[in-house]
Length: 260
Image (tube, rainbow, N blue to C red; front, side, top):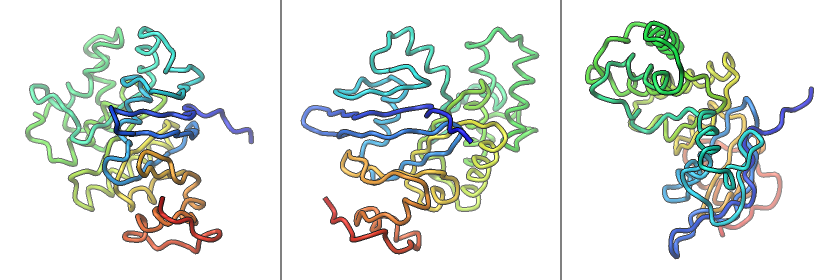
């Protein structure tokens, strides 16, 4: 079986704000049709990395190829085209409270397609069914629970059939049972739709549940990255310390590497 080229390639990416180094020479590939999870303490550059990937922030050095195009050197018009390849699920769902759940899901279709109102409604209903909320189209967002808001946000992220969906702390603020529901939806949709998922999270349990590969950012550097199985055998002391509070790790592949 021939591996598809990576949907995203990050090459020696660096970004600082004043004297604060946020990303320091970060390189890794995001495989097509897989789920990649990035872990790390707060303030390690995870959210800044997402903004670089979609071209909202320009790096100080390095390149990012999205579907074969270098977004770091692309024109603003080309960047706008590339952003159509992405769906995004924000921490709080980022729903419009003046719209119903279904209208929120249909919102991107209104601006990025030529579909009529009936077709937009049908597409939104299909996306809501995918996240197991088939009956909430006309429900006010104020009547949704936290978990339902996340799922409506996820339906909106997939309604345009993107190649990549970016998740920023998808389980933030959710109870363990609802978090499990979100995790199962991610696993199910990857299998059914073949979408590439990139997930930024602090949730180690979630990472182990959904990830095909895991990376960890620490002080702006990617200190470990690989398949989930290889990641768990890391020699990096900082990674093992971070993970062992919520996971039992197998023995490392060799001598431990001290915390930088």
